[in-house]
Image (cartoon, rainbow, N blue to C red):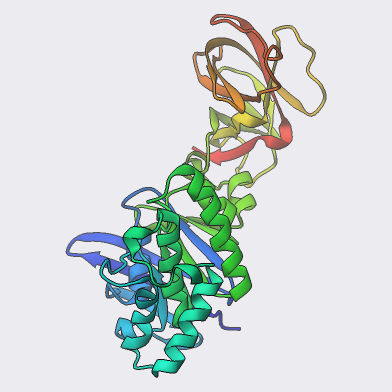
Amino acid sequence: MTSYLDFQGIGKRYGSFQAVSDFSLQIEEGELVALLGPSGCGKTTTLRMLAGFVPATEGAIQLSGKDITHLPSFRRNVGMVFQGYALFPHMTVEQNVAFGLEMRKIEGAEIGRKVEKALARVRLNQHAKRLPRELSGGQQQRVALARAMAIDPAVLLLDEPLSALDARLRHEVRAEIRQLQKESGLTTLMVTHDQDEALSMADRLVIMNQGRIEQIGSPSEVYERPVNRFVAEFMGKSNFLQGAVAGDGRFMTRAGESLGAASGALAAAACALLSFRPERTRLCAADATVAGGWNSLAARVLRFSYLGPFVEYRLALPDETEVTAVLPNAGEGALPELAAGAAVSVQWQVRDSRLLPS
């Protein structure tokens, strides 16, 4: 069965530089998929190849069973929300939303109906006569979204849609975009470098690095089961211990500590990393008993950081490997008073350990 949107080994080369290599991805109708990765990883280039702004060097793109690889952008029926919104400053809100419809030679009465519908979706009907400069950043973002949706696109493309907003607005607007996308059933491809944004909005994540796909999966799959160190580090903070797989669900650190690990595909005696998330840890007294199903390592406190909802301890293991423990803030006076140099036991559940290739 053919997917609604199908990238088949897409690549983009600029001279000797390979910006995107062998990008293959199938997206089902109604999905919201996020391309996530650091700057320069190829995610925006991939989005622009789909939009038709950048020609693909290799591979093919199919949309609803039709090859669109070499179609001009205006024949692809995609709506795009740009990073800086790209609103026309001299046009009113309704004129901005109508622009794409006018370019498609739609009749005036139909344009009015579609503009009204698009503005109603983003709750901006009352601002139809205003200019962009008279709107807040969040409202401008919603105008750009209404303009992209007004043409009834086959695919909606979002290029860092929230990067121009402050932290409070980002949280609000990302929820609005996700709700609109679900209500409309629009197939959506979003580019972002913000992990929280991707985790909260997308049905699936595509983690990219140096032009290649590192991992594809649901937000929980990618966060809980990263396939390598790059993904584990990019998707939040992680602790890493060097060592080797000892077999039977055991991992031997280079310092000689035997730890339990979730079973994986790595062979016994293989050099590997054991990864665990800082927020899955707890700190106990240095001589505390270790409960069944838990790992424990001796450590000393290096420093403490108060971060509002949680507190963070930086710890050193006996071999000077540094790890982080993140604990919820249980209220004033409830935080453990651990000064620099204090001896502790850092513990985490075996099920939260992940074996990764070194």
